[in-house]
Every structure is written in structure tokens, then in C-alpha cells.
Image 1: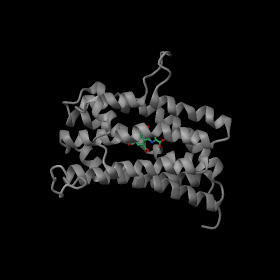
Image 2 (image 1 turned 180 degrees about the vertical axis):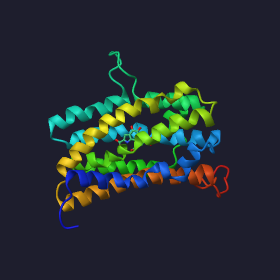
Image 3 (image 1 turned 120 degrees about the vertical axis):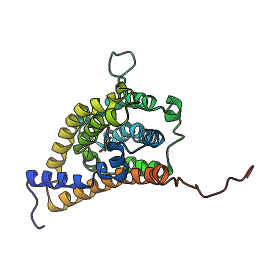
Image 4 (image 1 turned 135 degrees about the horizontal axis):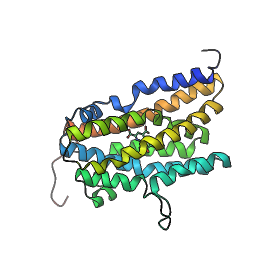
Length: 247
Ligand SMILES: O=C(O)c1cc(C(=O)O)c2c(n1)C(=O)C(=O)c1cc(C(=O)O)[nH]c1-2
């Protein structure tokens, strides 16, 4: 490639990376096909909680790095979406609380989500790689790394369609997180995509943007690899090491 893509071509290139999105991971495919048992589904919900609580901290890191007030005043909404607004305002409790309700509907007690006892090391490392990337990157690269959200509504829609059939023991009210994200993600992605198309205009910048989006796809895929090994293959870390009393 010797000349830069037009914004429309560049957007097409970014969208084409959706072929690597985590909806294609065997763990999520099993989820949509109703092939997970309750313990496996609970494992996913408890591990994904670490992603959920990290997202607003990641967005705070992006705000810290961003000198552009016009960008910050839009981006800050993402933090409110996940954390909820001030308790005195009559606003939403936020996505983290909605995810806790999802966990409870699936049978994971609130305190087990909050104390992160089920979070696998591989999931933690992958999510931490994301927040560390955004913390240290130029804010425009941070914006670009959020663009997996281009593909997220498909994931939420698939869950809303398939879970009530396959997992009828989960209270439908618990799926509110996915419903909320359908609108929130569209709004976020319009903003993130517009900024990316505006700021990544040279050949080198556009190639870099694709690398960043691929890195983020790697984060999401790697989280599920860790869950697949632990919950499908029954090989969580140290599974073959004998417990030694009082070691
Ligand atoms: O359930 C999913 O498949 C999924 C994926 C992603 C994503 O693609 O990063 C996000 C979300 N959900 C999500 O709910 C969410 O709030 C979110 C924020 C971000 C981000 O990178 O800032 N990604 C995602």
C-alpha cells in the first residue's frame, strides 16, 4: 500500500477485522449454541466482570492523556455508563451494577464477583494489557483501541436471542446489561470511529490503527482462551499440582 485510504476505505479495512472478533471463539460459540453448563456460564460472567470494572479506569486513563476538551466532554459519558452517576442524582446505576445483577441472575453471588476470586490469571493479564496500553499510548491510539465496540452489538444481540431459549433458568431481567449496551455501544462507536477516521490519515497511521485494533482483538480472544482451558478443558492453572497441607 503506497497511498493512504480514503476515510470510507479505511473504515472498511477496520470493519474487516471483525472476522477476528471474539464472537467466533469456540467458548462464545458454545455459549450461543446452549452448550455451556451453568458452572461454565458462571465462570464467563465472573471473569468478564474484571473487564467490566477495568473499562471505566481505562477510559479515565484516556481522559488523562487527552488535551482536547471537546473530546473529553463526550468521552466522559463512558465512565458514567459503567460506574453510574452520583448516587444523589436519579440516574442509572451503571453497567457494573447491571453486570452484578447479571451475575446474580446466573447464580454468582455479588461478593464473589466483587472480590474477583474467580478471575483467572490469563484473563487478568489480558485485561491489564488493555488498560496499560491505553495508559501509555497517545490518546488517539487509545480511542482506536476501543473500536472492537464496532462489533459488540452483534455479541449482545446474539446473547439476547439465544440465552432465553438455552438457559431459561436465568431470569430475563438479568440480561438488562446487554439491552443497555445496544444503544450505548452505537453511540460510543460513532464517536470513536469518527475520531479514528479523522486522526489516522497517512499510510503509516492507518497501518498502525489496524495493528492497534488487532491488539485489542487479541485481548478479547486471549481472555476466552484462558476460560476455555479452565472451564471446558478443566485445566485451570495448577490443576495438576497436588495440594500440600501447610506448605
Ligand atoms: O460483551 C462483549 O462482547 C463486549 C465487547 C466489548 C469490546 O468489544 O471491547 C465491549 C463490551 N462488550 C462492553 O460491554 C463494553 O462496555 C465495552 C467497552 C469497551 C471499550 O473497549 O471501551 N469495549 C466493550
